[in-house]
Length: 284
Image 1 (cartoon, rainbow, N blue to C red):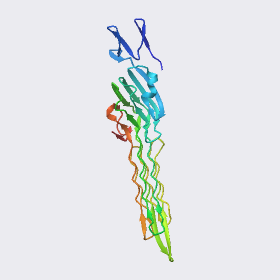
Image 2: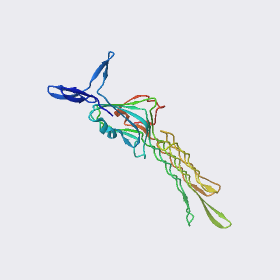
Image 3: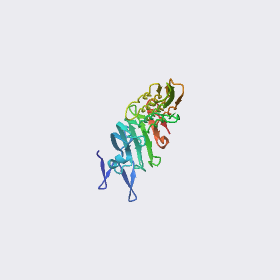
Image 4: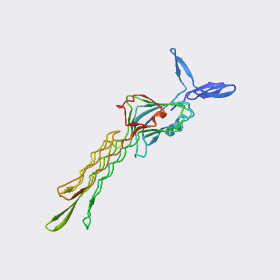
């Protein structure tokens, strides 16, 4: 990444961050040139970044832009999150007091929610067996997180026709467990079924998966719910089944909440291609 310099009074000054001398003091200023009657800003630092995991964008690029006051960043490739606790891309505080424009031609993917484990049928000696509920699916993760204290003079995020911002899908809920008891030929018999695990949501690890089938014979646990698509809640787990009269059923777990496409969206200017064909998930 190169810089352009201009010699002013035997002092070389970067055009990426331009200065003018006002009453003996150097002040940062924007430099424009007239091209065919239109004034164009030339004191601009252009940098690019392609792909990454859990990327703090401004911290990553800080050493490449120096003290430039106007920065244009182009994103390409794919940005992912390694867990739902992380955002795939974070815009932090490192470019405070600067003007920043981000041109997104990349795919930014939130982490998918995990499927919830299925419930169990639990036997007991004194005829007090029971069934447990399936566990809820995990919530989908955040694709783009904007720090509300970024401090930029101007922060614009321009999404191109090739740019995509997708929140992670929620995981499916686990199927409910099942318990049953029967007397056969004078013997007391207990039967259990285990609920299927919910499917994972769609996100940085790939496509959503279907929930697993419940297990058991005469008494079967409920099926796990399917994982949600990008920015979509996971499906709830199902209830089990039994052909034995005295049966107990656990409830299926709820589907995981859909992830967030852009968190703190009002803290920046969002422009370009911004409808739900390009940005899928909540904007809060």
